[in-house]
Image (cartoon, rainbow, N blue to C red; front, side, top):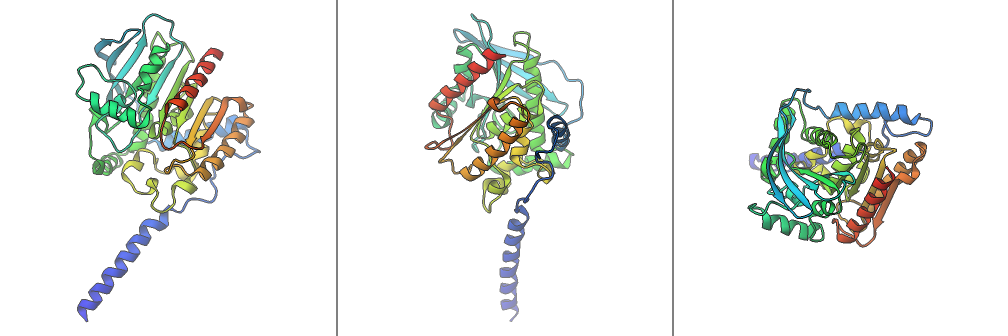
Length: 365
C-alpha cells in the first residue's frame, strides 16, 4: 500500500509539475501599452520607450576607459581593426571594425550577430576573422549555413560602409559558454540586479554610441542590421537608441501569442533569456516594442517556411506596425515582407534587397 501511494504521489507530482510549467506562459489578450488610435504618437512613444528602458535593469552609468585599438589587417579596399570597447561598468567586448580606405564612407552599419546555439563565434558570424584566427573554419561554415556563404560585414565594407560587429555576452571572446550555462549566466545577472536581455540591449546601445562618436561616420547615418537573434537586437536598438536611424531585421518578428505556445523556444529558458526583459510583457507586445522605432526606416523580412516564426504572428504584427508608422505620417519608411519559400536564413537574394534598401536610405539622408 505504501509503495502504491508512493507511485501515485510521483505520478501526480509529475502532472502538476508539468502543468505548472505550461500554465503561466498563457499570453495576454491585450497589452496596456499598445498603440491606440486616440493616442498622441510622440507622447505614447516617449512613455512606452521609458517603460522599456526601465525594464532593461541597465548597469548604473559610469565613466569608462577609452576604447583601445588592438590590431589591424589590410583587406584591399578596406581595413579591419580589432577593438576592445568598454560597454558598462560590468562589461566590455572585443569588436571588429571595417573602414573603407579609398572612398567616402556612405554610412555606418552596426551588425548584430545571431544566436543559433553556437557560442564559439559571435562577431565572426558577420565579419571575416583575421587571417591567423583559429576560428576561420567555424566562421566560414556558419556563413555557409545561414548567410548564403557571405560575410556580410565585408560585403558592406567593400561597398563603402563603415561596419562594426562585437561579441555579446557568452559568445566568441566573451565565452564560449555551453548551451546549459545560459541559465546560470542569466541567473547570476538577475541575482545582481540586472538581466541578460537588458545587459545585451544596453551594450548594443553603447555600440551605437561608439559608432556615432567615430569622426569618419556621417552624422545621422547609422543603421543596424541583424539576422535571427540579431534581428531582434536590430529593431530593439533602433527603438531605444537615438544614434540608430534605420534597421533591417531578418527572421525575428512575431507576437507573444504565437511565440508563447506550449513548447515554443521562448518558453524553454536558456536562449530565451537573451530576449526576455523582466516585466516588459506586462505592458508591451512584441509589435509594440518594435513600434517604438517609428518613424525611422525599418525593413523586416520573415521566411514563410521559418519554423521559429509562425507566419500568422508575423502578419498580425505587421498590421499593428503599419498603424503606428501611419500615425507618424511615415508609412513609406516601413517595409515588411514574407518570403514565401524562405526558411530561417539570410540568403544572398535577401541580402541584395537589403543592400538596395540601405543604399536608397543613405542616399536620402
